[in-house]
Image (cartoon, rainbow, N blue to C red; front, top):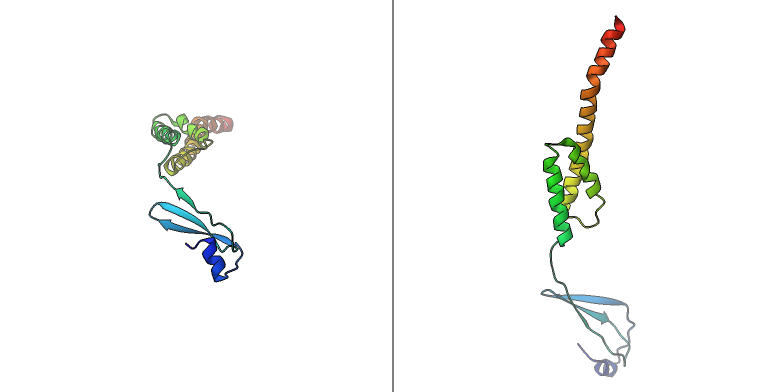
Length: 130
């Protein structure tokens, strides 16, 4: 990259308009495009480190899996998915399992209410008609 003295010698006059990002392997180099003669060009190296999900996100995902599996044995446990939806740090799998747990909680609760109330409504209809 040319320094300020070289640009001044060439007579190039430009206004700083944007930043260009050049990718070199896993390092990003940010440079200013265009500058005035006599100015100093600053470069900044940005290193991006891929670390994966946080410890909290992994714990959240484990809780979501446990609630989803145990909910099939004890249906009220499915409602735990509503509590886990409020957690800020979650993986896509945990989010999907929480949504599925909430949907199954609504279905299971409706089924339990109908199973309990159906015989009572039937008895009221039969005994009420005699």
